[in-house]
Image (cartoon, rainbow, N blue to C red; front, side, top):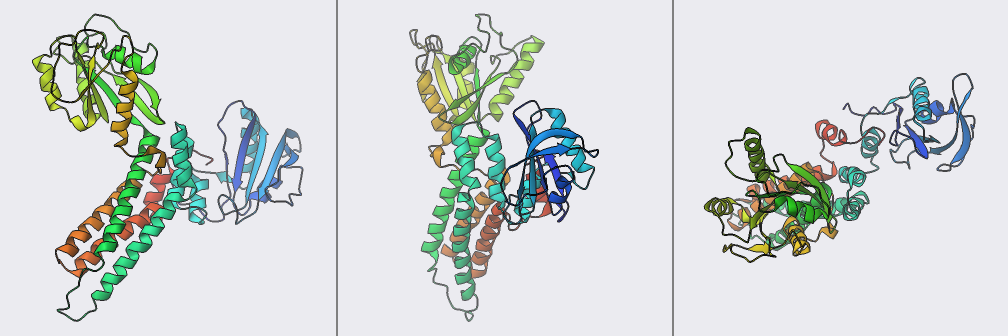
Length: 445
């Protein structure tokens, strides 16, 4: 996306297309009031932020719709520019006709995210708050909504600025020592403060990881041998019949997906084909997809039939799992247990739903990594990486300081940490980063 041009007036339909109560056409730029004034019969909008009833007319003076219109005077607006909103009735034609009139008379169509990009460029919000806007729109649970709202209202950027200020102070203290005469030994007196900043940034990283989990959700794959009850477990977790359940091995051949929310955490569940060797070409492809799904999952539920002894293939597969991101599920707890294994497991019965709520709690605990998701803050994957890199640089600086590697090396590492933090709120963001960021927005936002 090209960088927004100052002074160019942009317009877009900001509400979803379709029939509804209202449709909102948003116009922003120095000529916003002049462009919209050509097609509104009311000319006096003396109170900024007040809705006025007026007619929307075409170039011939014919009434198109009875609308509400509002002027927002710069600079105290969303974009920092003059903004006009026209609220038509919610049919597709009225909104599109209004937009076409604006585009034919001085405005151009806004690009994806361009209103929010202008808000950033004009200093109304920082880059972390812009990410909060996008997260708010895409939230799939109330907890995710709260995390997005905390970011949008500046909680993340406030923490970033406070930590950045402390890092800058540390950097200044070290660089003062660089001016000491040769042979002067730096006493490492900043080490306690450096450790405090590392702890604060580590806590912030944990909150951002929680926010990302709330926003993106987690992918949970249900895997296991044929006929151990994988599809029954999917249905039990969903509390409805989503997958076909039969006694015939190989019934599930493709991946079946559905979603639930556990304590505000969106969870995508994938039921996969039974893991076994098969001469059936279609089933073999399903087994291949199952292995790939396990590899790419956030959490694997490996299901075994607890009413029979484990096979050597099952034991080998369990041994190959990363148990930090896997849960061994002993299904058919309503029957006599014959299976045995030394690693941690949970007993459930998909048939009578026993242990299902406990399994959901375990999924939540494993996904949240024991973090408090209710404190989450929303960031993009790039912003999360910048925070992680900043933390790593500070840890390297601590190591450098403790091992007397030289004040210049320590100062350079602390400076790297500071620069990475600035990227999170957009104070060191180039056009390429901004293009990537705002291209994820819809037109009109």
